[in-house]
Length: 215
Image 1 (cartoon, helix red, strand yellow):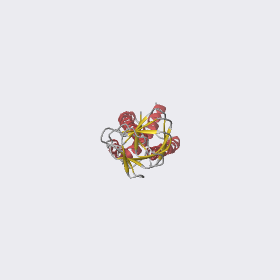
Image 2 (tube, rainbow, N blue to C red; image 1 turned 45 degrees about the vertical axis):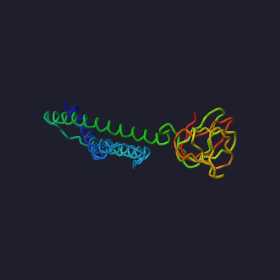
Image 3 (cartoon, one colour; image 1 turned 45 degrees about the horizontal axis):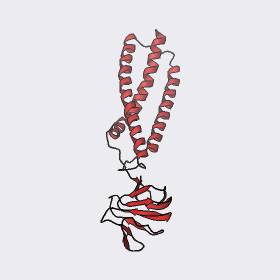
């Protein structure tokens, strides 16, 4: 009986430490998990994961410290009432801990997905980070988002625009209509997102600053 009491006492102290530590960050975790995570999030997945890892290490250290103290308590005795009360507390703590663990896990997942999605296509477009070199395979059509700049470096490209619209040739200071071969090494601009782009008649290497979609 004494051994059973000691086991419950040890388990109870361990869970109490974990509960206190989680509750210390619980308000922040709960608040963060209820907020929308967007491109302006103040934390990144890497930062969040580092904090969680540090918390786990801290919890482990505290539990080990308690275990050392408990093992030295050779003369401690607990009554049946103490054991019953501790069992009730453990049940409550277990329930609260599971809720907090789920909230931490959900927030970690949201933060990870948000970080991954930052570089994913938005509204069907892929967005460059400044000027990037992109290959457009032969017979493929590339469509640009509004305000996108591009320069055809290598290959033959024919403009694809709707009637009455143009691709602006900033280098030559003129408009380029539909089905016109695009000049190489000219800075070109697509002012609106209305399907303007070009078809590659050969493999085309193009420098892009903005959004694009290859189809």
